[in-house]
Length: 294
Ligand code: SF4
Image (tube, rainbow, N blue to C red; front, side, top):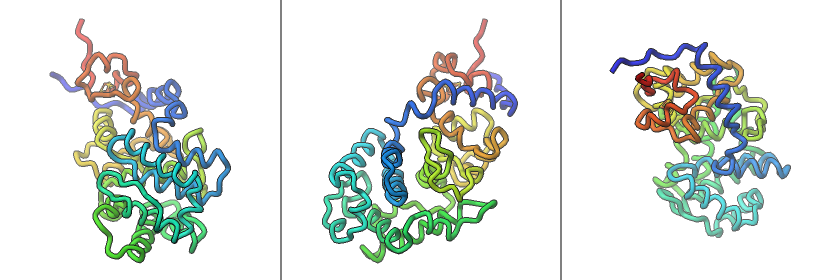
């Protein structure tokens, strides 16, 4: 079988824009953890509450979406959607029945939430801690490292050396992995308000964001010629983001949604189902789509 050559930028940009127009992200927020911080945002809640709910929702967002959405909702119901009041009251938060989720016990999840509460008490917001490390015009990495280190420090003060379940909730942005959940958290808070993302941290440039990378996104990105790297790490996220910046330098991660929801309704099978490829907007530029034989 001959391999289709990588797509040219000029071919790909209008197609990605069309995916955004035809499948607007706002129509899909109910199946995404963004629905929780977005609800607080639309209610006009305090920025510290929106960003703490964003952190909590993003860090639990792994595994089955149905399962982690249920856990987040259960937690917010249990505190009557007054999440900031809960985490600012360390005694109440220590006695709260945090639900366990997969690799983390309820107690370990509670330690993450209480650590965020401690940082907000001390610095007024998580943004302040991020901005201590952030390098404008250069990189978001140091900002994430600043926030990660401060959260880990507070978590250790609360519960001693970090247990595996707490470490899993707080992946280290300095370790070279793609840290998808951190980039998702930043996307929600930094990108312009498009009905999904919230632009709550306008001091941070959307141009510096990196794509929240997972296996699905990286395989699609390879098929579209957006990266040549084989591993799913920080450098690959940088390479894909740089490729997307050719289409929209000021806001390259606006295409995250297009890549997430490729194929019909996000059902891309990476070329296994060629019937699906034939209906996909990107078939003409995707290396996994085989040309139809006459
Ligand atoms: S053409 Fe097929 S493999 Fe390529 S993005 Fe679309 S659905 Fe996925």
